[in-house]
Length: 365
Image (cartoon, rainbow, N blue to C red; front, side):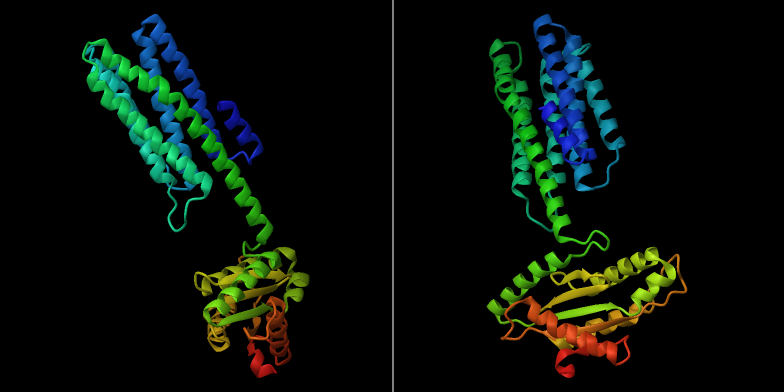
């Protein structure tokens, strides 16, 4: 499993959380070796090493999940509890000599770490992907096994039957759970890569909005949804006035800054569920759900005003303006191209009438 995760890290983008998971399973491999040494050599020292390995391995797994989720990570929040648990374990094995404490402390703590991992994996605002769900279930199963070990520790009071129950749970379920979590972690990494590839195929790398292919796909889905539910749909085609002059006069870096700023402004102006895409060059397309052409024009009027306030950090003297063409979904529209043709015609009218304005197709017809 360590080798599988290492290969996943090497070939699937070399992401930091994958390397952390690889380290977690590498430590786990050493921990299993230490556990075997402690069992056969009857050495308390090796069992302490085993416990430390479990703590480090579980901590790295939890840290990796938080790294992937992008949630705040404070290593001190892992280091201090781990140090306290390690000290308690060493006391239980050494001076105190409590078998119950030996069997309880580490599984309980690792169970808490894995529960934290499962919670951190949960992404708000969207459903689990199938690989994420499999990983989530594997983590919960890991938690249950650890809690079972913690519960079985209370049976360890001297009779061999208590120790046998603990060893059976450990030997039967732990290898399976280790494999399950590693396999599902690799599936999560592969799923993330597939999602990244889908994003790259459908998104413009400069502005991070949809590209023409992504806009076409979203447009066909939006048209089908609007017709199914009898809702209105508006399409806006817009571009920056004098963009070629900006590129020629200030260079492509200025043009790139203008495009990114304009795309960010458009994205912030629309609602969740609306669509923003770059059609090519400085031309953008917007799909506004449940919106008439007049309502879409009102939204774009606010954008048009804000474009003039948009400054380029390296080129403060470059004044930006934009023009907008608006079209509404008609019964006769066969595909998105029909809407785009009308919105383009409205945009041409806005340009012809002096630029820096909004034109609705009906008014331009």
